[in-house]
Length: 331
Ligand SMILES: O=C(O)CCC(=O)C(=O)O
Ligand SMILES: [Fe+2]
Image 1: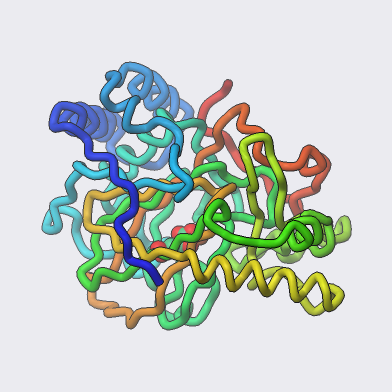
Image 2: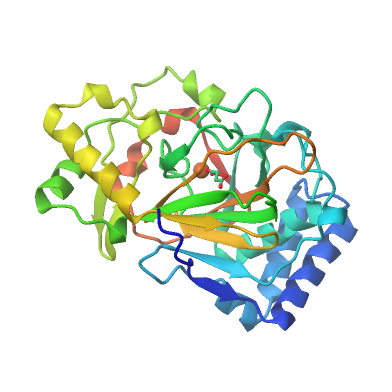
């Protein structure tokens, strides 16, 4: 896997100070990062008042890599406190960084939350959790988290995924692979653009996994949008055995290509990885959890970008397995 440096955007000290001050002011006013309508309203107002420097750094992903790393923010390791043992016990750990991410997410688009995930919070804690080591979710550790589109099962999934690093002593890498770097034959693109198999809800959505009102909807893996190829991909939750041999072979070639072009991004505290969820699949290398309060710790936000035309129109009719994303801000 390539470890070539991901495109970086370095915040200037003025922009960093502005963001820090805004996040601290929000925390001082509300005392928590748990969102209420009033807090979200204040976030929207604060985000709108941030300067052109910040806005410029939050512009859309603009390279074929489909991602960038925002640099310049900092995390004080001592005041961050111990890494939570799981999302459920995280509470307000690192709350000022939740608010930082929420502000940046609001500059980039509209943050979303899922009722069925991490108590409906807009900013998630990604930490290894005892008992979940081998899952295909962010709580795992001992297994490779295979490349996936975030919330691939749902038509309302994020356009952008943001991963903000709190702590990463062992420099454990997130992996990323862009569909724009992949080489596939026209025949394979045509095959994978047909809606053949569904993508089922992942293990982070217990309730959606029990959804029985309507049958799973087959969805295309690839889509040719005006701006180029986009993908919706999550092999761990795709019933591949139900497809014909030709289709499966094409899917296998796509997997191989994604592996070929994959890069490893090892985040340092304060860095924020921003991934275009329509261009890039992400994952994580395996590691051994420490479970001593010093584990790897990421903050995650998901963002919709109004008006992005990167998906097949047929997605609008999908049921989404009874799940609904909540948008942070009314548009
Ligand atoms: O731990 C990581 O680097 C990525 C985990 C992941 O897939 C996610 O948070 O969506
Ligand atoms: Fe993910």
